[in-house]
Image (cartoon, rainbow, N blue to C red; front, side, top):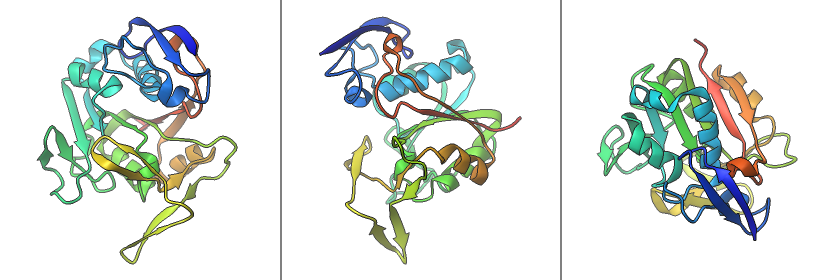
Length: 241
């Protein structure tokens, strides 16, 4: 069992974090038993570390934030408590887009109902690998961000993979999957979400070429922040001002 004392970037409190090992299990398995954010995971702490390097916590009284597919914990829970201009969205394809389902606004990321330049910040965690046209979704996010606005996201980026590959397609109204279908957990759908893309190190360039965003990537192996393990990348997309 690995133990480390860390200053959590989300709640800004020092806690003990535990994991079975120092790397392989840490993306989902590095946790604090005393977490006040209802059990944050590594990618949420990574996004928080970036977010609070760009904005002071007090600024969230005034920022307009779009939180995509939020989990009831961690970074999304902090935003729920502190970002008064937050809009949280989910994807419910059998309902009308733009309407409210429970506490979430129903949105198709590839065809959003928001007005132009509505948000200062857009955040989505492990969503990009489940979209059939992720670059259309990012173009929509670009449209809805104010000039100078920022989109932060995480997505699995595979070690040693140089070229990103689409592995699931809709063709003629039918689903085609390359290889064995893979599903990940989905906070809005208990059946999970199909993996449609596997991303490599060319992703920043693909984003720049297809969206116009300026792209930065940050990655950690930091026991002092409890951000460790594989696939800790946070992609920082800035709409030029």
